[in-house]
Amino acid sequence: MSSKPIRVGVIEADKDATACFRNPTSSKPGAEIEIIQMVFHLMNQPFELIDVSAVYNVTVDLGELIVEQVEGGGANRIISSSGITGRTGGADMQGEFTRQRKWSGMMGLITNDLIDMSGISMRITEERSKDVLFSYPTRFFQSILIIATPSDLSPRSFLFSAFSSLAWIVLIAVLLAAFALQIGHVLVRRSVLGRHSCDPRSIVLILLLAMNRTFSAPKRAPLLSHALYVSIFILSLFIITQLYQSMMFSVLASPTRVSLPFTNMHGALDAAESGSFFFSAYERQALLCSNGHSCQRIDELIAKGKIVRRTTEGDITNDLNHGGIYQATIDGEFLKDDLSWLDERTRIQIAMKDGSGAKHYGAFAFIKKNKQLKKRFDRALGLLYSSIAKITTGHGYHTRKEPMDKYLENSWFALEWFHLREAFVVLLFAHLAATVCFAVEVLLHLLLTRFCSSTRRCSRRTVIPRIVIIPSDSDDRRLSTVSTVSNPFLSLMSSIQFKPTRRESFVP
Image (cartoon, rainbow, N blue to C red; front, side):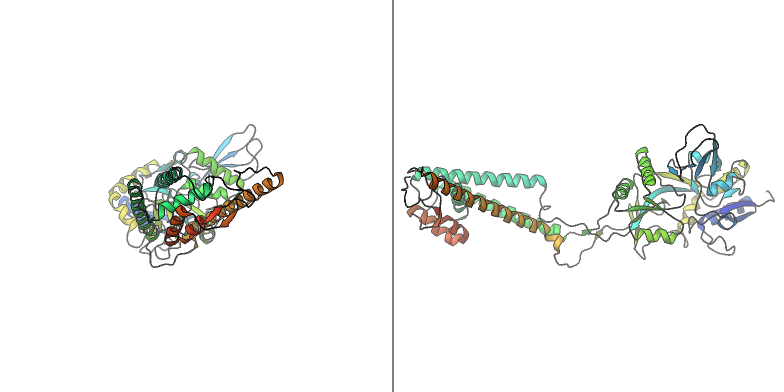
């Protein structure tokens, strides 16, 4: 045992890890402070806690590597120990220079022999391992993204999402095929019957007649094949309609889902680049990345000034309420689900586990020249390994985050605009299509009438279409009578015939 107390530097980077270390009589000084107390008690080694914030004016900074050029022009460059590059200002480094490794924050205090070890665990990285010694890992950290609780709900497209895209395509194709068969039936029937009261060249009337034959029941018994076809067609439409209605209701009554703006770091970078969100971070805090492409995008955000730097937790919280994103690391023991409440009591912020983010171990850092202290610490720490998780998650410290269910339980609600938006859009396009079709028909009628009147070249067989209401002939009167009962609209349209002008006779 050494009579000289070990200097342990402590900083409030994690409140639950070092909550009340300034009060020596506190029963809850912090989870990691308790671990240090137990380990040094087993070592029978005195120690002293040093408040590095008060003594050395070190803020929330566990340590970033600063490569300082001694000769040549340019500016200092900060190389994060996680592999991310940021700049403190000035131009890029150019010319010949020699590099000098320096550390900020807690790492700087250890490398400058101002403290013997850190009182809070930090990431084990390759760069840090070159200048300090790490104990056995005590935690497994992973990256999370913290944002304000979204208030937007995902709109449910219950009109079109009832069927899949393939089902819609097949259904439309079948309906078009059935309609084509009806048109063919009308053409065959007209060729057999011969004389007809309407102009055989009117495609519109052929379509209307096909609709009449499909959805009405004529008094005269139809052919057996046609009756069988119509029966199957009506039965199929009934089944599809009932199925669609059931599926549409199930989609509408399904639980409402919270609309998340993103779910990983890649989506967060997209949101920051578009300007809908921005990153908020402490001074000298580096954003973690897991691949070269993400690191490059983070460098571009830094160069564009889209990462806001803050000094207090209150400023970070205020940024979160105004579209900010805060990237943090958390012990894997506390975050079991991909989406959790940061504080289950207030529910104003959520924590999203970044599945594509960096994962790393955390441990206590020691000054490199005191290898014996690190070995003794590891032996005592090994005796407490099974209790570390219980210490960090128990008796008032960190608790496991409550999972957030992104599907909300539905109560009674009224249909709103975003529910019926698709219906209004379909109705609008249908009216526009009908208006355009009507305008084209009127324009063609006017052009043909003017052409025949000006040239006087209309033959006996040239029919100038003119929309009038006339009684139907014997064969079509039956269809018109039936359609009056079944569908007044079709009855009106079927009575609109193309009648030749008075100066010309109609020869079928």
